[in-house]
Amino acid sequence: MLVTRELVLQEANNRGITQKESVRDQLEQAKMAVLIAAVYEDYVQREGVDEAELKAAYEQVKAQYTGKEYHVEHILVEKESDAKAIIVQLKSGGNFADIAKAKSKDPGSAEKGGDLGWVSEQSLVPEFSKAMVQLKPGQTTDKPVKSQFGWHIIKLDEERDLKAPSMEEIKEQLIQMIASEQNWQKAKFAEMMKKLRAKAKIQ
Image 1 (spheres, one colour):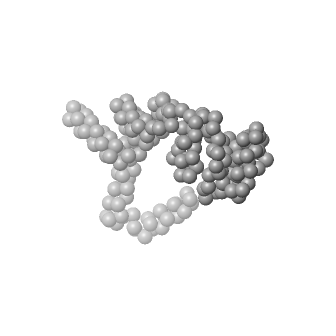
Image 2 (cartoon, rainbow, N blue to C red; image 1 turned 90 degrees about the horizontal axis):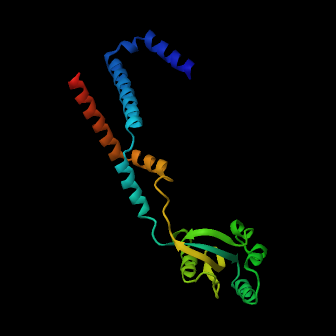
Image 3 (cartoon, rainbow, N blue to C red; image 1 turned 45 degrees about the vertical axis):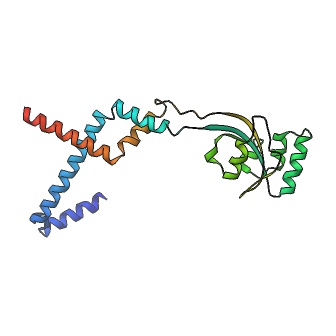
């Protein structure tokens, strides 16, 4: 890359291109754009996102954490008849985890005994979610639930209110989110220029 740059610069000098006024103006503009960007980046690193902006962004994120989350298990099979047979087996005292390991077609959860961990209602297909939220902790669906993936037998272990992470836990993500907003960047640039003008007057 360095060799290419030197060769192009040499050719431009030899042909007098670098002496053309239009080219020199463009080079000067490009240089100024780089300097402005560097000064702005330095200003943002020094000034950063203030506490009020962080708190406002956090409240927006926090507001999204509504409703409940569920610790749920399931067994997925291809045929409704197989699902019904498993429900009979469970009602006769069969162990849910053992049956899931042996018969579930969901590779992600079968080896965990059907355990899907903590999930939100929105993270699952509608048919699954609808059946899940009707269960009480400890209950299992008494009828197979059909979805695009096959037939599910669902067991609800626990439920709890969805809890937002603390501001400290997601502070870096919040800063990145705020700093990437165009309105914030424009406001920060205007703030920087105002301070530079004030500084120039004092000097």
